[in-house]
Image (tube, rainbow, N blue to C red; front, side, top):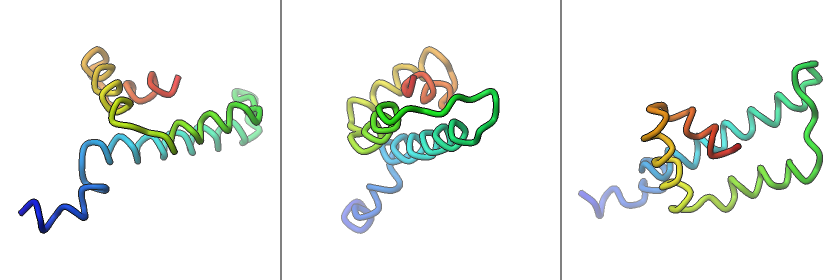
Length: 85
């Protein structure tokens, strides 16, 4: 079945799961920072560019790093938070 499903690999692989979770978490973080709530400071342009680059340049090495963090945290989203941090 690999030949039939290979076009879906970019969306239904573990790498894709990490990549799109990262995108969602980064966009959520940016929205919270821009919300004006007193608990959050707005990000400067440098930070916004760095967050966007983190998503745009996401690599297999980054996915492996998240998996390593997950082994320590035993929590997939917490591992992603540490990766972003």
